[in-house]
Image (cartoon, one colour):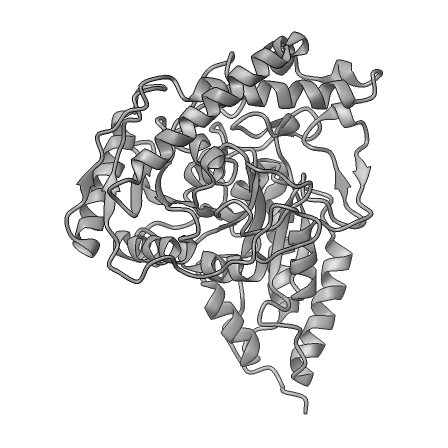
Length: 473
């Protein structure tokens, strides 16, 4: 039995940007909105903004419209593939998808590699009927917390186009903040979904390692969703999770580790890294106060690492860069940005002894993460010690392009789940991120707490903060 569309106010990008996932799914189910309308709005917003923010490439306009029409027909017949059918999304450059180009952000890979197999997250998105609008620009090799790409240029922050989007899921952050699509699938090896969320006023999850399968398999890199609302993260995570034969580290998990009331701690000083800026501390303190109203007294976690726990991570990332550079076509290696090459070329001559030292340093950092949670279930931290930096920069330190990942990178090594959400804005109107971290496999309670905190902070909505639908100069 075909169900006709009901009359509804004309959809526009502002309306879409303020809708929750559940609201859009309900509008589809009730035939108040059509996937065709919503995809057309997103494609129009891409056309209106992408020349400015440079968030996307390989936009599938014709294919997306055809898929939206098929989705509309399924809803009319009551045969939708899932409640995600017809929901527009974007995916990161580094996520392999059939028929879409992979560049890993760098001209060192020439014209890119055409995908012939879907990565596990792409499989799940397609199986559910979501509509992939295009791929999101990322920085070279994913090895900077920025949107600077030798392959596609500079991604710019819609909250102020002279400012960075963060990275490496840079285009995902910029596009979601501008109202394009409902979710962007990114990946996170040192903060790469949480940093763009912080820079762009969004929410993002780096799950417990293995909860969301990805390929190639990794012990530290996780796929994760970026959304406008923390309240939407739970549903996207449920869609994406589960074991996959293409990710040998994926785990059969979805649940909570404990039913008791959460004990929450807070820490804005790990004892290393750049000094935390006053605007970041102000938002952190505000979030701490709001959180205490939700869960009771917050434990001040005054534990420092006792060494610079970022240094071995930086070394690990150097080695990663050198290996990718070495594996590239020798004729194309000259396209490697000199700043990155000068940073990672040191790894060329590393011995097994040096690599062993790096591994030992990382294990010390993991032990520190375990100690942070010895008396608490969840930990509130800043996402970054800084608010932002110029869009043209790869980070705050040219010698260490991810130096500002003090509060994020450690939890990739330890496997802890972590959520970034908007904690407020500085005097320039730039978003400031706050992070909630949980114990491994406590993703459900973490997402619930993040949703409660977001609701209590009450930042976005009519008469409050508005999304930068028109990017700000």
